[in-house]
Image (cartoon, rainbow, N blue to C red):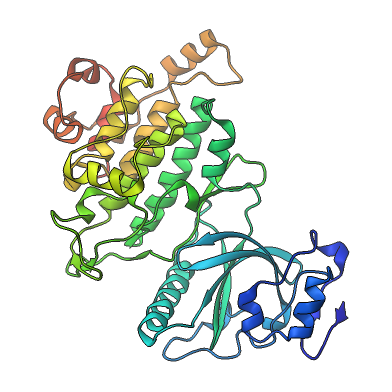
Length: 404
């Protein structure tokens, strides 16, 4: 490894992908201008700021187990933008990582908010591990910059993945598999009393083989406390639950009570996208979509045009029900998705073989013992148009009463 200037290290060019300009935020954080100029000239692009991680900052200290060694941290090209921070590709030791950089410039109030979010995000990331949650590697901070380091997911965002496919739809089995990845990640968060509050395709990244989805960006996540009044306007309008709005325009910082069911609503909009590969609330701006959902009861299209089976229509209507209490929890969602997935033809089996397997599969005891509640389904779906069909679906709908 070569050295350029005191305390500033550049890795070998053959260890990184093409040259990029050094991010402005790191230039401001203490990387010397001559190094920045070298970068502009096309030299290797991963540059280390010697000041990162040296100051634990005010009243929040990063546990030693998660404190990133600044001498081994390198920052490369920008690859995205999360809530309240920009995301860059980087390296830590010999591992490719994603770096979320948050500056601490601004008014004292703005700085305090950023520091609070950073502390909360790091704290939550250290508490939860799951195969469908981005892996947390560590964090560091100094007076002008805070950094969250996670695994680098090379498959891109779910939003970009779907846009590349349009107007073609995802294979139904793959769409349900992705939905299961998401719902299992959310079930893990909720079991730890954590609300994500910004569930959307931009915050769902694919692994390099594009077969697995992982949830990222905990910048808006927080612990759920039923007695606490939380900031009402969070997340991204198009995917936000209607209870996050009041009948008048919310003033900045106004508080409103809600619970983990806001994530279930957001999931329903993402699920609809997975199944149709269309933008929800087409033809509306984000604000128009949020207003229509909150005050007019508008939901994404479920007409014959989208051609969805009754089981999935039921699940969507349940998850985006106006009454949060009528929505299922994610344990129930996982149950229903697995039940539906078992009815789909396996790519490795012929149709007759799949029918034989399905007939031979026993109904799990915990599902078969649940009594189907017509009233509960009606309250979640909002109508009884297809009740006769729903009553015939067996274990799938019984899942709605499971894990309550």
